Image (cartoon, rainbow, N blue to C red; front, side):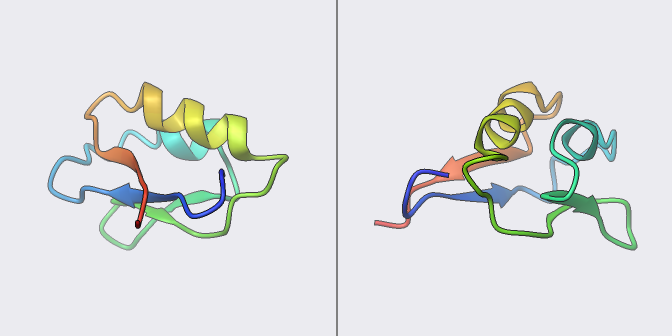
Length: 68
């Protein structure tokens, strides 16, 4: 991801479709409740997939956050 950006999962919105896991495997996973979770840091190789996962989430449960 661009320096300083991170992905936030809005747990209450997650529908457990696992689209994010399919789009960016290794970056997203599902926890014991079936809710999306970030499992790794994004690299230059995964940035596009992570951005696509955020954009394609059917529940809008993922968003890019600038911590600044």
